[in-house]
Image 1: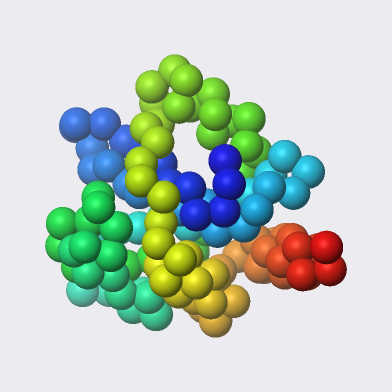
Image 2: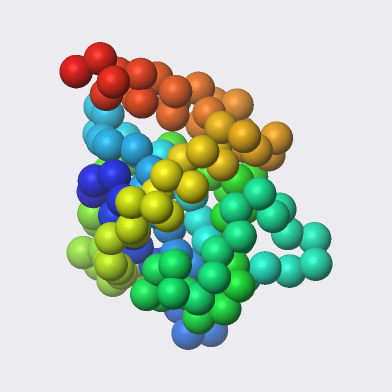
Length: 126
């Protein structure tokens, strides 16, 4: 999993959710954010339209409360056993919006925000 990679979780009985990897790997971990359909009470810091990613068919948002630090091998295992499906890489524009929103959102878990800053600072210094 690399920065910009995307994958789906869910099944036909539930909604599929698109996840975007928004950091490069760091010690086998990455930060992921999910994309969900926009609802009345959705966080609207980052609103996406159909076409912003091939999977998106209608107006969607990134709910930063669900941002997570994930183990790369866990994501790879989920893809290997079909509980997740790899999708098209996010555009650079989408990736930049998702990254900026993570830092701006009041809903991003503090630990995720700290890990994100550490990874991005580490990248900038290499």
